[in-house]
Length: 494
Image (cartoon, rainbow, N blue to C red):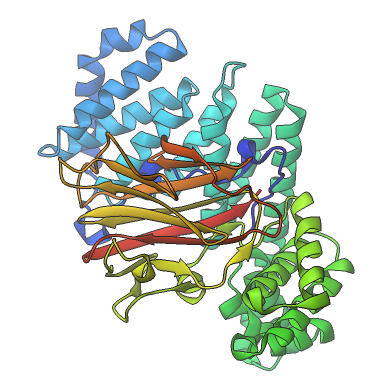
């Protein structure tokens, strides 16, 4: 499901920050079961007894935040006592949520879900609701609204529309209490998307039952295809349903889509134009996914476009960018990452929500995993979660100039930042463990590039060549001749 993105307010309510802890989940097989009710109750009483005075003295948001951080630190050292660890993280989550400290509450939730077989989405939704009930003027809104947006997307992708509704209601409530008209506008727009998703989901459920009786039912195929393409952004699974559906316009475009991957550039442009024409006559939340799909095919046609086709593609991209619409302004599915990025060898494969394989030589950027087709884009954010033994590497190519950020695992390997014409700069900062997930983000805006590592700014520079709306950009990531796992890949045009 797409985010609602405004260039003016993108920093407020769009998921372009990958919260580090949100990516720090181990494989399900490594998690332990939550403690039983009695063991948890005993541990919770012990926590509340030990920290009784601290809890009583925590009469300000800052004191509550400090106490929650202390409990998280103690919990990290309590792995040999799972019930105590679970109780500590849970208490930290509740204290932080009550104080309106979204960032700390989410750290506690992420630590819980990293260690225990729990449902982090439900925990997040409950905490967001608690935070929304106690919003203050000094409230740090960005982590809260970022997580609302991420939770809504996760809930929709998991068909948990009740959870998505709870979170969107929490976002609207918090925005009203803040009294910020811009944030409230975005929150209401997102709530409208959730209502649309819920309506389409209910229709799809009835349609799936109908298809079980008659697979050729055109109306049922249409409803399933609409939900999967326009709500879940799962075009690979949704297009065959649209192609069997009863809407003539969608059926025609979907049939062309199914063979478009091997089509020539002009055929891809024709497909992009068809989506734009259909979007022009469409009202409601389905309009934006159609426009983004058009941009996807303009991107795929790439640099081979010439003449009027190229001019139309560039002008269309500029117009849509002014409306806050960018191609793939969402977390890509693993299937989409495999389709849209070029992997250097045949070892990479999808494992759940993760793509894993062997990286190439980090000194040779041709072995990096690159976005196959450069895109025209002027300001953007690109991010992913990565786990690898030696290095975490992000690379950006802007109009043929390469920028690279790397962070090493070994204690003697600091952060490296390569700028064309200036060589490599070194600074402090290492990967804590090769087994930990880390989030990497790059932001390019106003001709300045900034790399973030686990949410903190790690390096920045001015671009060698100022960007324009026709700048050609590629993104990439890698490690160094070792197993590397990647997930939560996204890019957002601002």
